[in-house]
Image 1 (cartoon, rainbow over the protein chains, first blue to last red):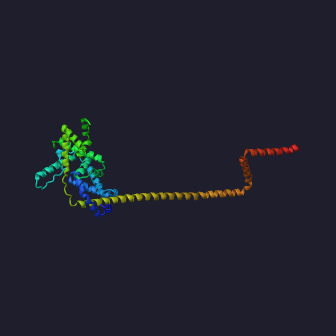
Image 2 (image 1 turned 180 degrees about the vertical axis):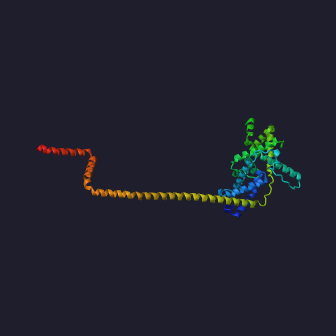
Length: 184
Length: 185
């Protein structure tokens, strides 16, 4: 966004605020949903991240890109929410506690849809076993398609730390798969 | 490098990261394949990690945002900005009030102290002036009686303050003058 529009948004101009929210609500909601896995909480987290971004706009360095800055706020918001949750979730409990929603679809190929949904549920369940920061790194790398450098801007971690966390997250998920007998 | 040395290197995190990123050289890739062929644990873990990797490649579906999301977010942001401004104005008003109170109270104290000083000077000057006038009038009436006393005091002061050598010389001159008439007689 242009600097003028950002300044107007910071002053409370409703049109500028609306433009800012419209421009970033989807990527932020996607990130929050992928990290939190629950629709209502993701909506609330994305909304809170956008509000915090508007309130803290005076601290934003206009020399740097805006998107990583706002994504960092969203990522931190999600990490805080994840840390407030229960530390561990068993794979057997998934689907019962409502942490991951099941969406009914109208696919012409219900078996493939079912298989896809099952795999999605398992992936999300595996993500639940990771720490909040590791989960953020995995989501940003795989699902947001960010490079190591972009993840560095969002999380504040170094590239080597990101690579290490990513590897350990994958190894942890692989070990969980093996322990749970989901992969033989 | 020996086979044992290769195995140590292969079991490091850096090696696995490079293997997952397909960043191994052809020679390293061959070593890696050979190692997995004889190490069942590494092969099993590698397969599981590749499996996780494949699962992660497909992003999960994300539901659509509710229609009112933008309006609700704008309303929430506006409300938060207004609240922030209210608190900032409150803090600024409080700060200005405190500073004003401090300055005014300091000025008030200074004025009170100045007034007391002036009063003290005015009240204290009158009796002092009266006493001085009375003393001068008394002295003017009895100056003849007091004169020898004043002269004695002055002489005493001169003698006291004069150096001893001068006094001794004056005494010798005086004694010499007294003896001189006696000898001539």
